[in-house]
Length: 410
Ligand code: DI6
Ligand code: FE
Image (cartoon, rainbow, N blue to C red; front, side, top):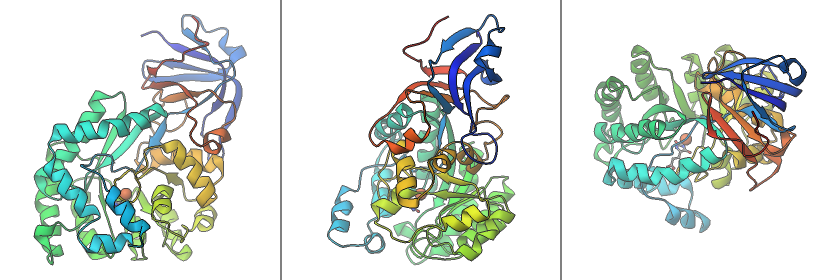
């Protein structure tokens, strides 16, 4: 494969500890699937043999990373959207057997092929916005075969599309109806049957759990985490979304890659994340859809220099959002992140939340060549505009997924 040399670009490399790390009049050389060299357009004159792509001043960022999604599921929950508008709360709907369990019924009823077909428009929307890595969770099967079915769909999406898919096992997302009143027995099933079976089929990159009054307790999560750690799998957790259960402190104490949601995390507890390099994943889509008013402890996260990632949380209930660009805007507007923090949240910090920051998430020599060329010159425009997709070209692992339409010359 010939090398590709991007010239006349504005690079938002997202390297270093803060900001965009912008380089003007920049050039970037891709060979095979990696970034081989970065420098100025002037210096790039001496490089021979590569296919030159003149970016005419356009912005290049790392490929975007959606580090928290429930993208594979059956059916939809538009009816619950209406119920919530009439005053029912998310918890009330869940307690009456709706919520996550209504998606469990639809997901169990669907074949693998049907789930795949339903996931396609969602994933194609994210791809069109320059997403090159996505995490997809199970959690609507809630038995061994249906959890494996979901993870197989996630795996197939990664084979069908030029995209890195990270598969997260979320068997402990809700208590399935057949285990009603027997949560500890279900956790035993998760630990002894479901998780080991999914892992044995190579379908698990990380293990997640929903720690909440309507989910599972910290003690139950500890049991799942002990098994996951024994299998060598990294940990993640949905914590402090609706109430403070102490889940984030426990998960960080076990070196979880990330703690996600965290609206109800106490500022005093944020230091526990710093001690363990745990990423704070903020999900403004769920905050918005549930009309939450409790903000995550952003100032404390900044003070302790906790890496903040942001993600769609794409799911049929609390965040039917399939746009990572919209999430950039929501993170700034609702959570008051700066546009640079928001962009770090869908690049380098999202890579950290998946344990992939050595491979992707920034434009640095040696990393996988995952990048997006945008029809804009200032990175803040990505978060500022709503409903405009200025993605002009996408390269994933050194291959053009969407070739740059204009300005390309050899
Ligand atoms: N919290 C969420 O926001 C998603 N899962 C979770 O634990 C929502 C899942 C759903 O409502 O279907
Ligand atoms: Fe989630």
